[in-house]
Length: 92
Image 1 (tube, helix red, strand yellow):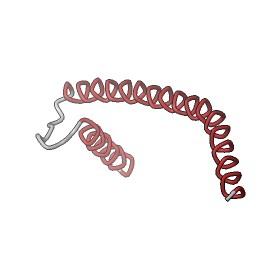
Image 2 (cartoon, rainbow, N blue to C red):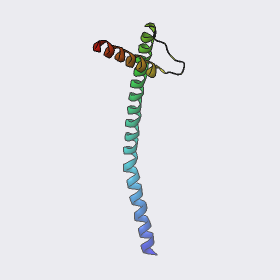
Image 3 (cartoon, rainbow, N blue to C red):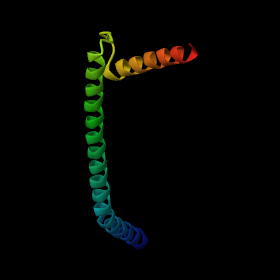
Image 4 (cartoon, one colour):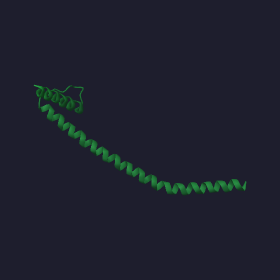
């Protein structure tokens, strides 16, 4: 019975020390992750606004936009069509 109590006390002591050491480390990791996610969120917003601007510029050229196309698909279609036209001109 003494060995069991001693083992439980040692286990509890080790658990308390480990939790006291690991808690601040986990908090730092969580803070770094949140900062990193915010950074990527800001970059995503910038990329999305640039795509919106590009789509508006393409729309001004008269290129038709399908209702199902998002801005990225729309710009990709425009660029691929321009590349095809440029290749045809080079062959002539």
